[in-house]
Length: 266
Image (cartoon, rainbow, N blue to C red; front, side):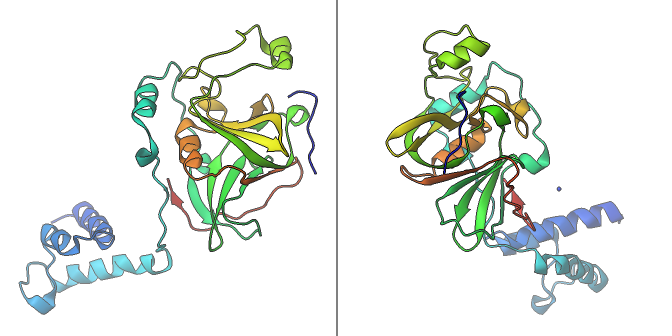
């Protein structure tokens, strides 16, 4: 079922720093080199560079990690960026906004039943989820449409575009214009770095998931119906989503209520 409107994280300080570095070493393939840098050889191979009491400190410092390790880390957008992306995003014609922590990219537990590859938008919470296997999802912060202008329902990805042109609808021209009939793609374009076009059947709903040149609005309900993401995030999502993937947009009052639990920030 679809609803749409007519509008479209010797001194004690040094010791703590060593402990932090020692933790980081666990996640490196060059574990032995980190131990040498720290001056903490294992007693099994001799070389009592550090007192046993200090070595015991490192062991204790590691204990909390036992319940926090995850094999999947947050995704990195950098590898997804094309040379054009880097060029356009290096000198944006808008102010960079500090997005609240909860709206930065995370991998989270996802207890719902949508299939991997599905996009779900929780309009109440201002989150978009890309469903992963094994009960996980990537959660992104978004800006959503005001209730009177928002799309909700089930759609599919009918088109994907990089740095798309923007063609303002007649309604947008009447409410917010005047605009040119077509605005070329680029860093100043309201659609940002990527466009993911929502279709029902073979019909374009005129709603999109897209980037933004107004990142200060992430986490708010302020857009003209569409779903806005940070450009870095929409690039990341774009590289994951496939044509014809299912997109579920929950209407206001039907929050997905997905608990983040322990997560890694992207």
